[in-house]
Length: 136
Length: 184
Image (cartoon, rainbow over all chains, first blue to last red; front, side, top):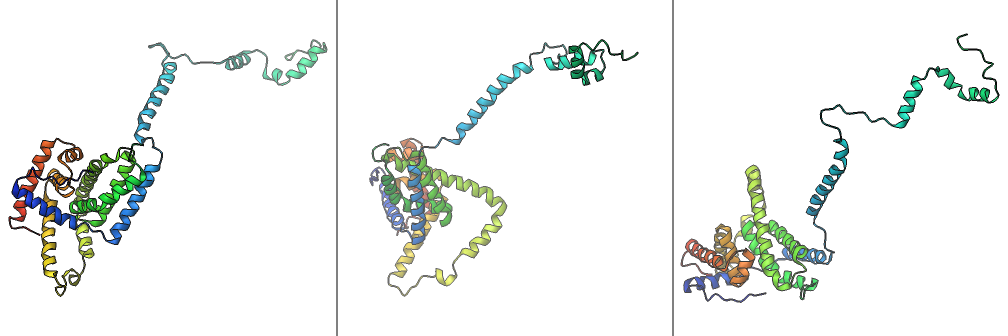
């Protein structure tokens, strides 16, 4: 620590005042036991903090989060915006839903599907033709 | 870790700097408790942010941190005092020691002389507290701490010329406030 008492560059009157003020101020530095104890605790915490591994500053998380959010937007937005402007959006229908619609449009009544296994058995044993027509 | 920047080195540096730092903070805050908090915060900040820097860089860095903490405290107080000034005044009155404890014991030899010295020091510290921040900083670092002009400039984040200007104005202000007859 450079604590040279080099006050030679001051004018004489200022230098005399500065030397006297320095003496007085330095003489007033004595600590009482409360001050010593609290400062010792502060020193201990500081030394312990020096031994801790370097922590990643919290403010780095903000840009990282922003970058992640932008990446997610880039990944999600194109599929959402892939509709030709001006045309109504075509609902996406999967294969199961199409099969369900075909089932609903079938002329056979729902009771036919309810006993499907029975009719399969009848067909296998050649007895389906012998059944009377439902409307007969 | 740089040469000299060891936990023991940091402890030695803080041990040497703590008393002066406390008095500097106390002059600015006029509160011992707040000054102690500020110095403890400054110690912790130095260790976390600059503990691995070379030890000879610590003095100006520590004083810079200390001044910043003092300035932050003053800003907070300014805001707080706008709303709670009446409350603070009452607390200060309650904390003041009774008059009989404040009066010096004139039976002790040199008590009168000590009283005059204490009075002179009080006037100096009071005048120091009233200086503009940059002038006070230059005076504290250059005169009280005894840093070189270069180190003072590093601690204050300005040029050598600015340090000299601030110091000259600080000395002129102090001598003007205390009078030419001021002595310890």
